[in-house]
Every structure is written in C-alpha cells, then in structure tokens.
Image (cartoon, rainbow over all chains, first blue to last red; front, side, top):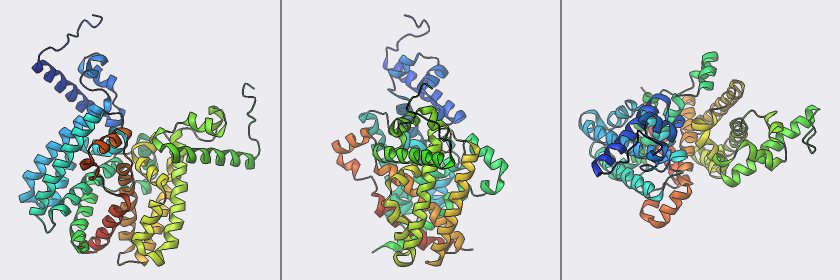
Length: 213
Length: 213
C-alpha cells in the first residue's frame, strides 16, 4: 500500500461513514468557497482520503454535488412543509431558501454544470427525487392558496429556477465586486435576493389563476 | 517569426476585421457545440490564428463570449422593439428568444460562468450596455401594456433570467438525453421553452399590477 493512512472500508456501516464524511467535507468546502471552485481533489484533501478512494464512492465532483443538491432539496422540503400552514406559501418557500445559500448556489449550477459529467443512474435518482419533492411541496402550496395542484407545482418550479439565477446575480465574481465598488450605480441594479424572489412569487400567485381557460 | 501564416494587424481597419473574424468563429462554434464546450484554443483554430494572436483581442474565452452576449442582446433589442406594436409584449419578448438559441445559451451561462475570468473594463462595458437595453425594452413594454416603466423593466429582467434557465433545461446533457430516452416519464417533466416562458410572462403581466401599494 502506498497510502499508509488509508484502509479500504469493508463493512456497509464503514462504507456509509466514508460516504457521509465525503459529503460533509464537500458541503463545508462549497459553503466556504462556492460550488464552482471545489474539485474532487480538494474534497479528497479535506476529508483526508486519497482521490482514488473518493472515486470509489462518487465517480466525479458533479456526482458529489448532485447528491448534496438532493440532500438540500430534502431539507428544504421539510422546512417549507412545516412552515406552510403558519407562514403561507411565499414565506414558506422563500425563507428556507434565503437561509440556505449553499442550496441556492447548487440550484444555480444544477442545469448548466452539475447535470453534466454524471452517470445515468445518478441522474435518474436525482431527477426522481427532485420531482417527488416538487410535487409534494406543490400540493401543499395548493392547500394554502387559490392555486390548483398543478399550478402549485408551477410555482415551486419557478421558485427553484429563480432562486438559482437570483443567487448567482447576488453573489458576484471578484471582477464584478471590484466593478460594483468603483461604480455604485451599476451595483444598485443587482436585484436583492429575498425581496425580488418574494415579489416574483407573489405576482405569479396572483397572475397564474387569470390564465385559466 | 515562428508563425509564418500570421502577420500582425497594423491598421485600425485590419484590427477591426480580425476582431470580427474571431467573433464570427466563436459564434459558429458555440452555435454548433454549445457555449460551454468552446475554448479559446478552439476559436483560434477555427479562425486560423495563433492562440497568442486571439489573446491580443480578447484576454479570455469568457471575454469573447461576453462580447457575443452583448451582440445578441443588441439584436434581440432591435427585434423586440420592432415587433412590440403588432405582437404585444409577450410575443415580442419571447419569439426573438425562441429564434435565438445561441442567445439563450449565453443567457444561461452569463452569471455562473461568463462574468468570471474577465477584466473590469470588459465587465463594465457589458453591464452598462445590458442595463441600457433592458431599460429601453422595458419602456416599450410599458407603452404596450398596463405596466409602469419600472414594472416593464422587471418583466424584461424576468424574461432574460427565465430564458436562460428554461433553455438549459430544454437542452439536456448527453447523460440526461440517455435517461430521457429510457424513462419518458421523466422527459415529460422538462418544461417546453416557448410555451413555459410565455405562460410565466403572461402570469407576471397580470400579477405585477396587483402588488402596487
């Protein structure tokens, strides 16, 4: 063995621990530096495994982040469902997004980056789970608004899509931060995340029923 | 000279030709293969220049694509303004997007990728121009709907953001195409670009005025 610190996991429990440790390290790195700047090698270094050991659990960095995205969808679903009766649909959908910058970062990357460079089974698991969550939260929206269930699903889909775009706009690159410091009149054009998302969803909730045939 | 085919451009006209040739090659490659798979080296090979010659005009691939995005915004502005009186805001905004897959591809990449790895002057030019266009099209929307000018700007901003997300979802990766072939019930969850975008904008046009204080 050229990796003295590494012993291959044998038991299912041990494997499960390894997997959880990798996801935890990826979550920490992505929270600190942003999803786009984290590599498979970086995750391996953070968790203290060889890169080849990480590859036994996740084929690519994108598969790690797709799994993290699935975890975030589940956490968000639980929060949104719990808050819906008291807070109403808009706050129940948006507040747990605002509180989860990593989830929003992942949402901003899922279609353009994370769904590339993954295996078909990983993609299938992710898509099935995401659609299940969107359906369940959409049904809850229908229960607590004038929207039908399919309109509720539309609203939840729009919330996820807009959260990704607004998050990306609200967390500019180093170049844009420099530009915004020099030219504050450009910076004021950046839409604030929470207020913009709530306003868009409020407009959609009011407008969608007017489109019924 | 180690690059026998290359003679440095001396006159402003010659430089302008070079620049236009690089942009044309980038446009063709991105239209064929998608923005995310095109590199600075690929553009250089397509246009027949050395990579170092391309770098005299554009520091990075992202600067090439930011410039292409600006070109696409201008073309779209002209179309949207020309169609607005006859077609009304929704068709005038969406039809020229549907007809421009390259523009939608660029919109899907601007915030997450293209605004990184560029110079501050390139970012400034792009932001100023984009905001100018959004304001002019937003004002035209206000003229041809019940929306105020600032609400028209909101609608145009939403159209650009949603076009990027919907385009990315409607042009899946190779993995997802394979998955969709095997499991058509997942494929039907992919929202169709034009119909979804028009419906979202129609809901926003109806809903935004209900939010006035």
